[in-house]
Image (cartoon, rainbow, N blue to C red; front, top):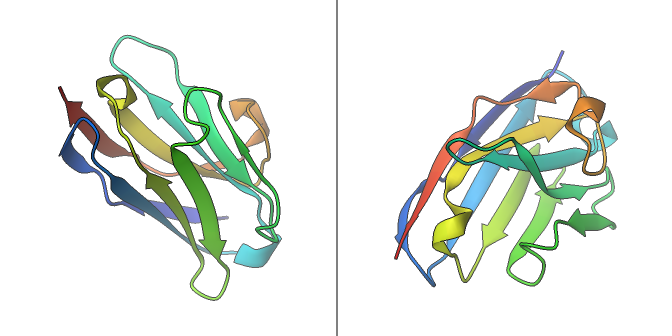
Length: 121
């Protein structure tokens, strides 16, 4: 089993930045590929970004490419989602996911509870 705890969400103005954190426990973190998804009100959950277990390869949705950066620190069992140039359409609950890689949420076995990100215009 893997437990995931997200933090770092909040309210920010358009153009601002936030950094999300996801701390994992329960299994060797360095063996886990990790991802972030988000769900806006009334919409399906969608892929945001993913990173392999080494941190050398990362993947992004077109909507966030160039603005968001995903990284990891295996010594701290933590992944970081740096979000810059935020837009109101980035408003959503952001979920950390583990043991999958890529944009298909069914490929991930473990999920956090989510953290709210709200971007005001």
